[in-house]
Image: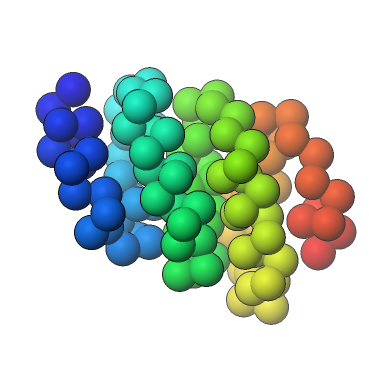
Length: 113
C-alpha cells in the first residue's frame, strides 16, 4: 500500500526505466497491487517506444512473475521489441520469451524474430 500511494501520483513523471524498475520491485515483493500495476501498464503503453530492450524485458518479466496477463501491455512490448530487434541481446530475448510463455501468450512475430 505504501508503494502504491507513493508511486501512483507520480507515474506521469516516470521515465521508461522508472516504470520497469517499479514493476520489477513490486514483482520481487510478490505484491499484487492491481490498480498500481494497471497504472504502470497504461503509462508504459503510452511511452513504450522510449523503452530500451532491458526495460521491455524487465517489464514483461515483472508482469509474468505475478501471473498478470495484461494483453495490451504485452502487445505493446512485442511491437516495440520487434522494432528494436537488432538491439535484442540473448538475455533480453530469453527473458521476454519466458515471460510470454509463462503467461501462455503466443506471439508468433516476436518468437520468429
